[in-house]
Image 1 (cartoon, rainbow, N blue to C red):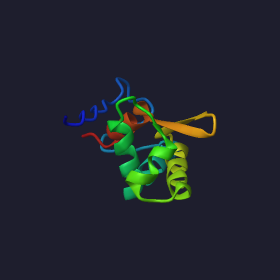
Image 2 (cartoon, one colour; image 1 turned 90 degrees about the horizontal axis):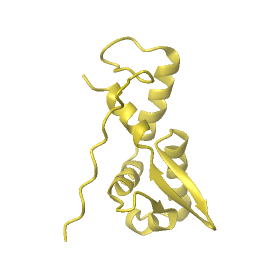
Image 3 (cartoon, rainbow, N blue to C red; image 1 turned 30 degrees about the vertical axis):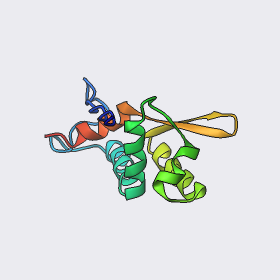
Length: 117
């Protein structure tokens, strides 16, 4: 059985937060917010983590389930998830001793909208 394709992230109806960087000059606060988000995307491990979350049938993954497929230690995976979380791209929810992560689709859509023509 083929894996379910990841859903396409649609930009928000209103681009109040992050207008396209191609449409008009950005304010300092907008530029900082966008830079933080795009900076978090600048590592192959973090891109793979986002990809796994996007493809997760339940929309979330336990931190313990990233270690094997990513091929990095628990500490390294947690470090990368922390960077993604600080950039607002993922959310973690503690359940007992483990943290379950999910994508922030609205934040990803803001970044996508910011570079849309």
